[in-house]
Image (tube, rainbow, N blue to C red):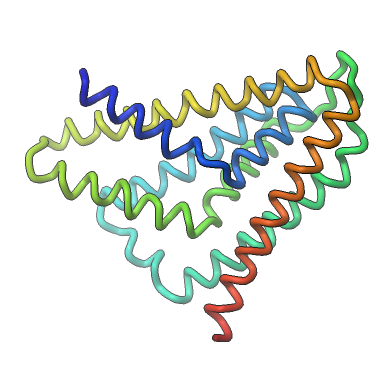
Amino acid sequence: MSTFLSYILLGLSLSAPIGPVNAAQLDKGIRFGFLNAWLVGLGAMAADAMFMLLIYFGSAHFLQTPFMKSFLWTFGCFVLIYTGVESFQRAKEIKATKEQAKEAPVKSFTQGFFLTLSNPLSILFWLGIYGSILAKAAETAKPLDMLINSAAIFLGILVWDFTMAGIASSFQKFASGGFLTFVSRIAGLALIGFGLYFGVQAFKLLFL
């Protein structure tokens, strides 16, 4: 049980650092409420699951080829800047009322999925953390134990996503309209900043 809990804590620690997904969850929670913020996290988890499966079956090496890395940096730059600009522009529409704006759940899920899928840092993170865990566990653990530990990591990520969505949506319920607009714009600027960073990395790979 202690090992299982340690992997849950690992999942929490992997999710907690501020990044594009957390910024997007914050923006979605403020503008649309809990469900949309949570679906962003679930979409990101779906992409994480793809990375974990690729690593688990030893098929992640192709993601580290120069072509794929440059493609992902470029695609991630576009996705993040587009999302950030949209969030910044729509921040002024936020009203501190009980009525929530609406967005199709699938759009929130898809946004979280592509934010993570197009993030080479996520790939490197999973290769470094999860890959090393698998390498170590393979020496002593059975395949079933490795799957259980992987599920524990995902449970930790799920707990964090649920918590983040709750925090983001609570802002909408209790904060003033001006504060909500400010926070949403900060989230949008953070996404644009991440996008510009991705763009710089793509430029370095392609032209330097």
